[in-house]
Length: 447
Length: 103
Image (cartoon, rainbow over all chains, first blue to last red; front, side):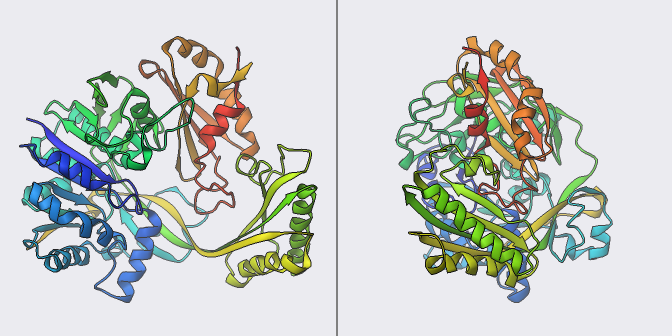
């Protein structure tokens, strides 16, 4: 037997149409098949939490409609089950929205299994949450709390799959659980090596096309065909935990040892101890082998004892960020750009602003220099863009930076143009450890 | 000398204020040189422009890959940083471009 798992989105805002090729590819396979959409960032979750407080029929991801309205009908016809964290802060309301979309499109009403229990604020007070052992974020944990969600892991996702649902919606789980959950259900896995292998399957899939040629191209060194039509990945998983990473026929992109290796190490720290709720995964003996065109076979993943506690993310208000830019080009442009920055800095300090202001010159090493004023072009002629940024608790102070840069149009150096600015509320996060007995995931089936 | 970019590729990821950057040999015959020359100490020196960084290096010889975990590299992390690239997504290119290996 083979279990097929495709990934149609690797972040909230990933290509809306990419899943169509996966569904078409899997339609003819007579085997269990799943499609995951991994779309939940901290910011999405925290803002969804605010939406839910304002309107109890909301709180699911604002991207849910984009993916479900395009792919639900095709997935149901093809027998491909959808597994996603588009439920965000309120998967129950997300499930209702999925059923509304089905009704609007004249589809058979889908059976939707919802995983809940990740929202710590349902069972714990803010004081209790702040008293949990802190992993990081000591300097922000005291700020106004907007969301506190524990990473549930794959077990409840497996339970949801066991209900025979067409769609599984979750809030916060580990991203890789969107793959491991279905695999635990289909194969009944309990041993650590297989749980680790299923986690690495999910880890390789969870960023979408990052494993199949996207976020990889470096023309002349790493050429990737047809990125405009890049194929999103499919894993073909065997009962022993070994699997092949591939992509739908007729799509762009590339699956080879290099693309898989880059994604394997993406956001990984110690490769002997990649922690998820089910296991500590060890990829130091992981093997990659060619298995035909755009097919890489993965084996040799080991699992060790699972961590004692679960990790939760606490999102807190962190004030406002202002960001403003202006361009200068031609002879002496670098000096004019520097002068513009000095003018704004002088006026901000005279207004009593004490917070750090980032002073970047784009075209002058800003991305690698990070405000360090290290310029790659000393001649000073060229095409430069001043970027200033500040984070403050006070919205008016952040706005002042944008105003001062805007004033440069008529009160700054010669020939500056192309001003853009933004004022964005900021969220910071802290991580806490939660004893397992404080967490009780539950499943609800809506049909 | 030549930039590491000539013989290796990689990708950067972020978790909080910690970046991880992989360095992967294109060709098996360059793996020994990469393993010998791209040391944690030299990477730490290179990244010190971003703050008081601490670098851990992990080896995956069967993949001809190194994984560098660089603490305090992201100006406080994606939520707090004033940098243009708050995730440090460009740090893989920074390492491959700025790190020199022998010819």
